[in-house]
Image 1 (cartoon, rainbow, N blue to C red):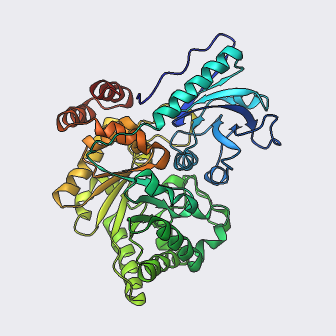
Image 2: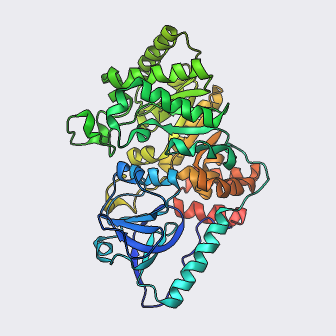
Image 3: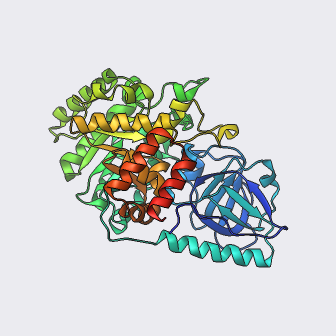
Length: 448
């Protein structure tokens, strides 16, 4: 097993479009430009576009699209996060030239190394197909060994819920509720629509815990149906819990649906509030939630915060008397701590979720949690990368939320750790930091 395998060695005729890896994986397929009619070759295609929204990605027919490559975008954009949940390899910020690749041309997309290979001749195509088989075999690798953290899954569609048990996930670690409504945004204020979805997912998962993140709208997740005002900097604007507290018509139906599902079906739900900046915001959200619980005569549901804003992370100790759990969102936390936009293609190579500023902040949150017996989970693309997962475990995360296709690799990497190797990795994460140095260290120590 390797955590970041080299691309095949191709001949001089192959054209390399260098971008940044968004979602890991290697796919060989004919290209299909966004908006094109059905491409010439049969079977799944590599979709090529200037950029994709989360809604675009969520609507992809996985029988038609096996991967995508964009000329713009960033590796931690929400479109990539949707692709992560669906298990679609992606490359972003690959440049305008990809938009001239003819429909039907056989290409290879390397999400591990951020490259789209075009104009493959016969020998290069053969090498690409062999490498694809090798990568897919790596993805099926499994280990019966113990791992130092709990592994939960994340899904994008309700239909994926039944796959959690098969994948060996210990529950649903992040249910991004707004993504379930892409394409049907008018239902966001419909309590029964939420209730039906939560019940469907709970029935498929059974008694395993489900962490339901309340609506996280804003940033690069625009919802035209809500007629929200334009914001010059939407990532620093009215998004997540800020929006929910200002829009009871969005917040209350969702909370009522969750408590009804817990009451009527015994759904093992946890509620997590996103974009929390101050403890007072959490307290207000919790007050509303508990009032609804009382009105519905429903059981109590654990309440937690998504730690993704520096002000929340740096004052985690102030939250420990109020929350039941923390969940660190590494994508936004990295963006805010390093002032690096997650959607700007010019900065796609600069954003680093293992920058020492990020690793030290994660460590401070996990220490606050450990000191007060508060579990700390981590979600985001970093948790689904074997090296990233090992680093997060070394930093004290108690659970990781991983997209189902990547669970076997993550479990395998974690099973190779020992307390001694985790101590070594943590010390380097807090001092040297950075994805490249830590990847070299972890792969060497664990033989990945």
